[in-house]
Image 1 (cartoon, one colour):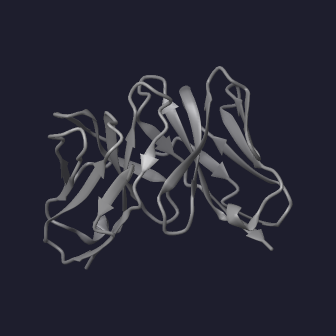
Image 2: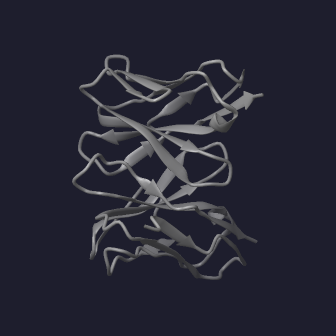
Length: 113
Length: 112
């Protein structure tokens, strides 16, 4: 099992550019989520999904889009990058019928100049 | 908005000593979880305690939960250099088991 994988590991964007952060899991987890982690703060939930075709907003959704066409994949799209989106982004997944323990990917460090 | 608040923000101890971190939260929870994050890496689940439990053990970890005080503590006994990491508490609210709300973390440094 690869667990939760994220690509790319690092990315530099210019203000206004768009990009997609990829996330995939091979554990057949129903629940997937995207967080951002900023210095001195805990994780903040951007978007989440409880299954293929179902997504919902978290605490800080503005400027981001998601879709969930398969159980395995949950990409995060930055529509028009802003310096305030400089952060480390983590994808996580969880088995819906279990202990709610979340499994995390290694993260994507994004810098917007 | 942050639900969990960890205390202290940073902790530096000698190898072999015990480390205690605390977490307070604001609203009723279904469960509380502790995660570890090594520098530059993703988070790893350590232990989960449900709202009807008061204490739980896993190896060198001991977690307590006091729902009347809305607080939890994580004790790491006989610390090792490999325990150097940031530790986060996360709460699952009563009406949403899968959405976790996170504290800002405690940075633990174990000195050899």
